[in-house]
Length: 202
Image (cartoon, rainbow, N blue to C red; front, side, top):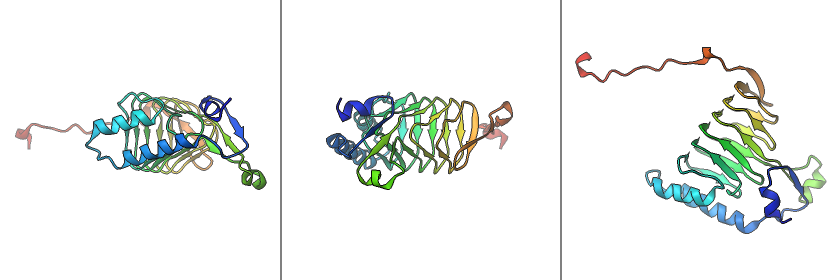
């Protein structure tokens, strides 16, 4: 099995050197550079770049600059996804992001990790585990999603959280390490203000 084949498998792996596919990484970084330097109003051009960069992209998602990733082909957006400024995705394993997910500014999603033992790190050992973010998840600003984590459908990750273990569906989870605070209930519904467009009422 090649490194490229290993990286695309939806299961953890450990490799003994840093010789992962270098050419694919160069392609991804050049596409990220192109994306980050393409004006926001040039929507079709940005979609064209994203279709080349990402493993799964249906054309509806929005990714604001600056966006960075390792390979791109391991990032799968399963429906509409909004990714705000300064997101980094280290996709040495598949990263699946469900439909209607919102990712706030300065979020890091890292499938890559390293051994605790310094000697092993220094010898180039890399650990990688897939990440699954299910539909309707909101990840707050400055959060980090670590290797091997699954975040359940509809959950909210509070700003500044470090997610190191799975989070179930339908909860608010916050902190470092991120912990479930409570379930999401009907009491969380907000009532938006209805604007009156009738000038006679002014």
